[in-house]
Image 1 (cartoon, helix red, strand yellow):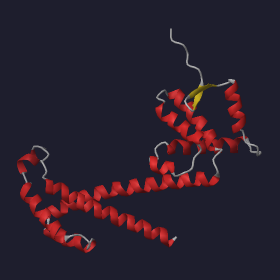
Image 2 (image 1 turned 45 degrees about the vertical axis):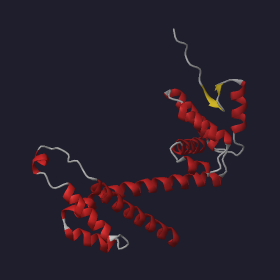
Image 3 (image 1 turned 180 degrees about the horizontal axis):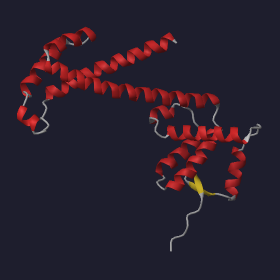
Image 4 (image 1 turned 120 degrees about the horizontal axis):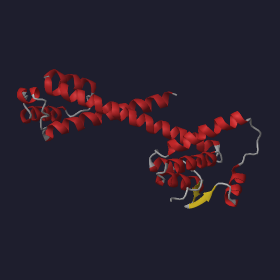
Length: 216
């Protein structure tokens, strides 16, 4: 007969059972001194716990720059290792409490870092879709090359035209394969067009973001 797991959380790799002397001591350290209503405290606790959960997905290099406490970083590392649902839930509650001890400027920096990462991911996803569309247009029409050069004049036009010609030569239209729903085998030139186009699209997106930030 399996024993029922104890309730608790991890601190620096040590399991702290709820109701234990160490648990009582830690909770006393985490308890705030300013008066707040239960509703406000619950709202703040939920918000900080969510922020702590979101930080688990933040890039390691960005996380290291935030200045989070060592105890919080250790608790977050433990949360990533825990697979049990109930254990994960209790660990996240503990992280939420530790988040309340972080200085306001650190919490603001954490929110800003998450926003920047989200915007960067969204911009890259958009660039991927746009790159696929542009590649299809470049291979389908010579006019598309001219339109691309007008939009991105920094592109090496000779390189682009050479890649387009090679990709068309390597992968001519195959109506039989298309009718059978077979995916064609694409050449190196075909893939390089995508990379070239995507790099310019991402570069243009990052430039626009820098301009927006400078205008604020």
